[in-house]
Length: 421
Image (cartoon, rainbow, N blue to C red; front, side, top):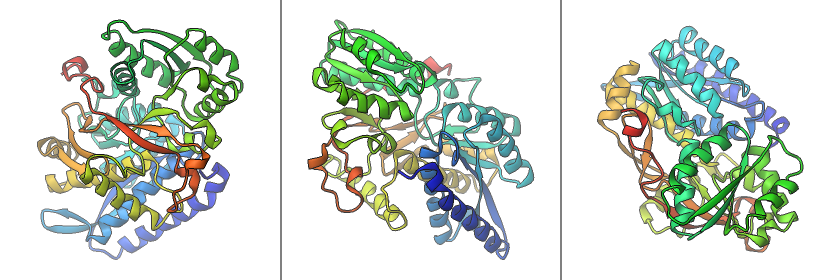
């Protein structure tokens, strides 16, 4: 992945493109504005830059196809691009600017969950349509918390924990699971979902070992987890901590003592470690950029088509959150076209009245709580070592896994009743 400093030139080019698009739109009869806000600087930039690229591609494709169709009238889609600097307060201030100063009624954004929660609250106050395209806390979907026109196209951290628990117990037949968790929000959420499901699996014992954020040396924590003699070492570390955890699992020999299962793999993690640190590691992925070999030919074709379009402009394959952001923009536009309006309430109602859609991740549908329910909740991948990486479409470091299974069971998403509906 690019470094944050290395992203500056690209970010500058992106905003220049946005300015040029806006200038071109001035010559059009009318435009539809959409807010686009992600963390292109700060701790979230390793993911947010790819999200911004996904949104930019989607907007370009909408305009290439003639623009937004509002009841037979084609209107150019104009992105109002902003960086939230990985700061909820900055995000809220720029959300207000997008809505009040630029007149956008819809915003697509969110790189970290705390920012998505803040934007959801702001969307309620402003009566705006909000599409989160990142992992969010489960509370985002709860009745009374979720804004009436707020949606999330990814999932909750709790759900990653739920899916992992079900897969490790039901498919890997694990009877002893050591949970290696980061002692902050995403770890707490993952563990909550894990426990909700694992407690329903008879005969499965587990323990949890918590490490602090940005731990440079995780050796003592890994040793403690292995003292449980687990069948599986379940790693819930995120960001730089995930890189350290996977790297040190190789260095300490932890990976030889128990199979590793990561709760939510991303390009940023898998490409940030030596190739051999990924070898044999299993984990969930929201989506992987190489779906070839998966049993559903229609999903493979849709995924390959999206990656092909992406690779025309980029030297690296898309991250799962770049893909989800692309479709987050497309679904926001679909809501406008179904409603024949940019009114947030009408958009939300139209999306729920016509909930089914398909993308690179396969068939999906929107639910009353603003969640997107997929036929294939998560894919299970197995990491490749250096000798196995032979992909020619992009740098070999991105050929880091193969799809070996899928989780499509009922445990991944809680019921509407559980969320207050």
